[in-house]
Image (cartoon, rainbow, N blue to C red; front, side, top):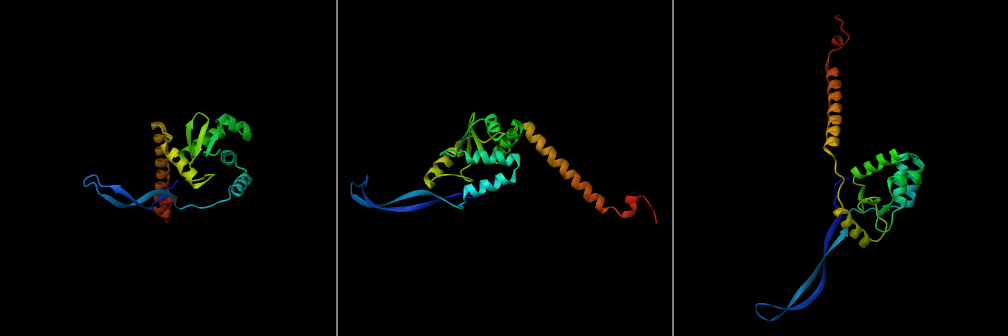
Length: 185
């Protein structure tokens, strides 16, 4: 997920109130303000239309995401184990496991506890603005998935292998044609 600003702070003037100055004992007027979180960079979408479109694509992984999104509760949570998802959607447990791991790594989902996942409210939320901000706070306190050292190494090795292939392609392109064919004309 991009690291874009999703909420902004707004200062709202509530009015004035009188307070007793602790040093002088005098009654003084003060302006009272409130700092509020507001949604920022918000786009309204029609969830059913998007979900129907995703479902039409037919990809098994898309069906897992569709099922999770379509079955969120009011706290933006999906309740169910990966095995239950596989049974409900009618696909293999391995595909569900791969898909859920990808959604966790993409910060689309967070695992709150065994069988309880929360969808990132910055990406998708059903409900009011106030509810979204409450769920956002809960989501941000949930632990992000940890990537093991082995996974980090495997990912780096893939990147290095891809870079080495690109280097070889560039080297091959820069070699004159007669050196490539081995002929001297």
